[in-house]
Length: 167
Ligand code: ADP
Image 1 (tube, rainbow, N blue to C red):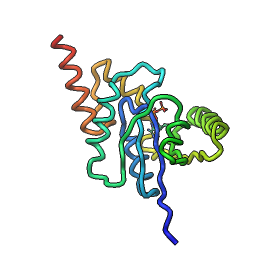
Image 2: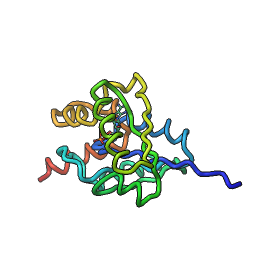
Image 3: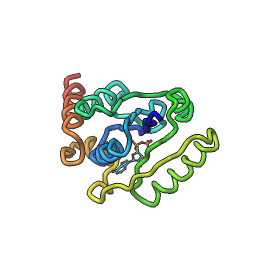
Image 4: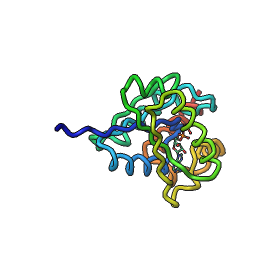
């Protein structure tokens, strides 16, 4: 009998991707044969980076990982999962407030399509305090974000600042 390939989707805003996300991605890519990281493009949160830039950063950060695919989607995650024919969703958990939000989303998604299973990976304690929104705040206040994000993010945000200053 042919072995079934285990594939999962890791959706998120990744605006920008942080070392906390990278840790979840590395761990999930060891658990699954293939991992699709997909950027949610219709999030209501005020965006720092365009979808193209976020996708580009993800491609560069994981270019050495053969079992990771980068993508983006509009609309409902459930519809994306159906299009991809992949029904396992990976999400990360940090705090109790993450749990409440994630719990609700997991149930809603399963109500929308009962094939959906959401798998949660607990943050490594080293990254439990890191969020994209705190990175944005530090960046907007001209702080140094290097210790919290992959190098490509630091470079992209540095270029973005230069572009803005040169306008
Ligand atoms: P969303 O807007 O969909 O919540 P995010 O990019 O903020 O997208 O987060 C994507 C997923 O990664 C979420 O499940 C979130 O809880 C998780 N995550 C974010 N930061 C961390 C971290 N530091 N450690 C572990 N998981 C995290």
